[in-house]
Length: 182
Image (cartoon, rainbow, N blue to C red):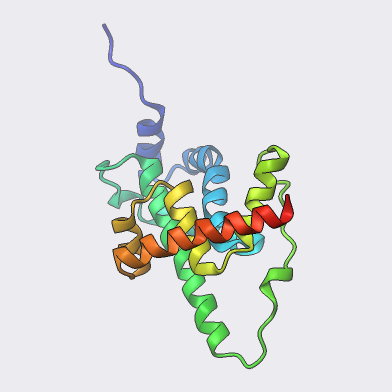
């Protein structure tokens, strides 16, 4: 039998040689999922779009560093998650250095880019958005991105027990938010 053809491997090799068509194809294949990942962490459309663009710039700049130890999607997701967390840290720093804070809870989000989902899922997503930032990030990383508490602790620079307690508190708070809205 002949060798199997791996389109991802082919596209990655083409990207390594600077092929802009291959870069565009990689972007098309991953952009939506990576936007959703960024959005779940930063909970702001414009910031998620910025994270997405900056992540792909980093990917295409550092594509030669990709060794294939993990899947390309996992490598890309790690970059998106790290950039999203950097945005949160920057936001927290800016908020602590300003006298007057904007009410981030009043921000309207555009869900048109997200896949069409049931009413209950929409309520859960809105409930997650209402969680305090720390709870929302840990809950998103654990439930939606598949990180374990050890990985979350490393990424967020917190202890594993803090990750676990924030996750439990986030679930309880989310349950209360959903009960009050149902």
